[in-house]
Amino acid sequence: AGLLKLDGPQTCSVTHDLALAKLHLVQDKIADLEAIRDALQQMVRQCELKQKRGTCPIIATLVEDER
Image 1 (tube, one colour):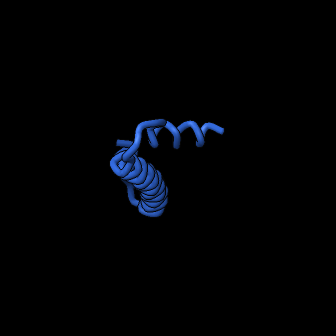
Image 2 (tube, helix red, strand yellow; image 1 turned 45 degrees about the vertical axis):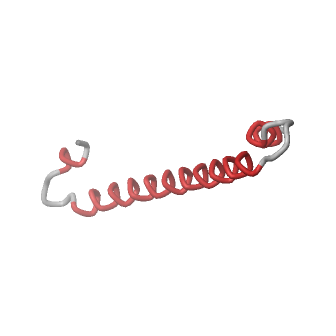
């Protein structure tokens, strides 16, 4: 919506810069989400491989990360 307000003859470079900044923001968010996904996958795998009773590997990982 903000880009539509810039419609005019000299606004292409401004629009480009805003779009590029938004692209970088989206890429950063995707990278963060991929890191979260990878961490969750690893914790789920640890939980699935756990064969004896005791502390849940997911809880143990979260507690360790708190320190």
